[in-house]
Length: 278
Image 1: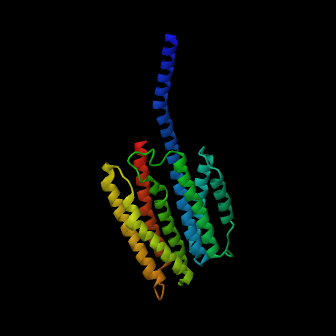
Image 2: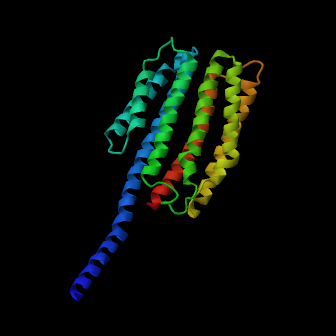
Image 3: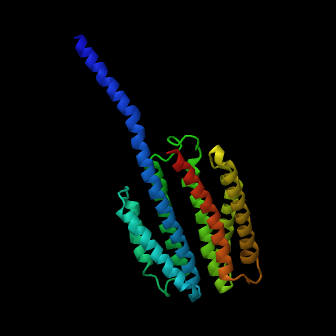
């Protein structure tokens, strides 16, 4: 009887040690896989956002962006191939993206800029939700990442902020090409400007960081805030309220792209910090 009790205690101790050391390692492995997938998804979202912007310019009459459009298509095809070959859980959102992208590739000169804009928006929104779902499925949440209590802002609010800038880039590029801002476009651009301002004043200040990365983090936030304020000012003064629109499409597109890049740098810095903790 005593031997049986000793054996049972021994088995329980072995099981406890196994769970103590094996389970955290298993979670970390999944976190690493999820993080790698998120990096590719973010790259895909960025390329899709660029494709939307160049398509808007092209459909509004600027055929000089044709080469940039083709480059975007090639980039999306390359990242899509990488993601398709990965063993990360994909499901309905991935199938939805692939279907949507194939339909967008069939757009031509007869497609309305408004339809293109909305279709791109739906596709990118689906990818953003997919990224957030991936973070939850692969334990990349505040419950599992110590010291990053606001990590949810990275997968949601920060991503949505880049989308507000991306949408304003596409809308503004079209306005800059045709030199006219309709009442609907004014309403949309004003709404997007307000979203960008809210992120500048609130969300960026909420992001977590490792203490040794504080200086770098704060510099990135300052740079992004300055660039976002410049973009908002340009949208209001040179597109929405301007009696005559004189800003060139490429100049505006570059400004919005530079602003997006500043937010992308923050996203990448957050990823680097999280990765170093796994």
